[in-house]
Length: 197
Ligand SMILES: C[C@@]1(CC(=O)O)c2cc3[nH]c(cc4nc(cc5[nH]c(cc(n2)[C@H]1CCC(=O)O)[C@@](C)(CC(=O)O)[C@@H]5CCC(=O)O)C(CC(=O)O)=C4CCC(=O)O)c(CCC(=O)O)c3CC(=O)O
Ligand SMILES: NC(=O)C1=CN([C@@H]2O[C@H](COP(=O)(O)OP(=O)(O)OC[C@H]3O[C@@H](n4cnc5c(N)ncnc54)[C@H](O)[C@@H]3O)[C@@H](O)[C@H]2O)C=CC1
Image 1 (spheres, protein in one colour):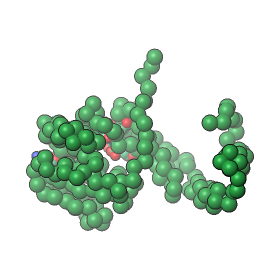
Image 2: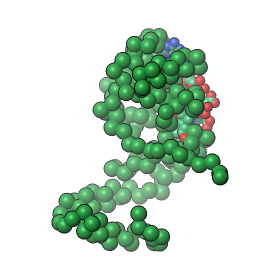
Image 3: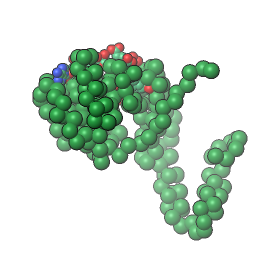
Image 4: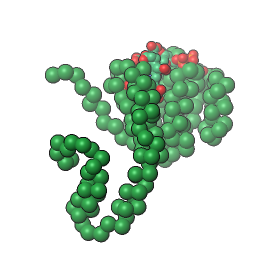
């Protein structure tokens, strides 16, 4: 059978998690930038020997702590997630080893095989969020798809979510009755229905 993407997407409440980014160069900056673009209140600290000026600016804006230091194992204390993005491949592997000992989720930016999860391309319209992954095969494709969907998904998709949320609160009856009402109200949105799921 052809290889397919078997990753399971989840939407993390990163304001409730302690995230450490190791590395504050180009890649550390990109990871932080997209994390904060999607989740401005992410609870994140960055440790690196040096930082780019744009990282310092971004950190100031979002109240992100920047720690100028060489990486040490103790930085992993009380973290849920670690993202290693230094230019030192050996160090990134060491971070992975330390993270595994502590059962932390790890993203090792230069080594997809060592990642427990990948960062995705993210499209955001109000309450609606779409995450895109190419199974680590082509991040550029993820970026282009993100840009494509940002263009084609109508801005007013959020109005529909908010209206349906209001309506949802007013429906009486059991779960099945609610599902039926919401389904019939939104039926016209899809032209062809193969089967309900
Ligand atoms: C596996 C993964 C792990 C992870 O980092 O989570 C990973 C790994 C690597 N990326 C590399 C390169 C590039 N990454 C980007 C951009 C993004 N990379 C992102 C995610 C991921 N990158 C994860 C897989 C996601 C998936 O499943 O598709 C995005 C989507 C999200 C984000 O960064 O938050 C963000 C776009 C955000 C946006 O714009 O929306 C660009 C394009 C650009 O910057 O313009 C390039 C250059 C061109 C190219 O290579 O395609 C390299 C090679 C390094 C080298 O050669 O030295 C590796 C390592 C390797 O593959 O070995
Ligand atoms: N996943 C992705 O999206 C991508 C991954 N990469 C990979 O990411 C890696 C990083 O590249 P860049 O960010 O461009 O490097 P860079 O040179 O711009 O930045 C390196 C950062 O690592 C820090 N660092 C190095 N040694 C350290 C130590 N002992 N303790 C703490 N911090 C330390 C530096 O202080 C600096 O902040 C490369 O290996 C590259 O192959 C590259 C492009 C995209």
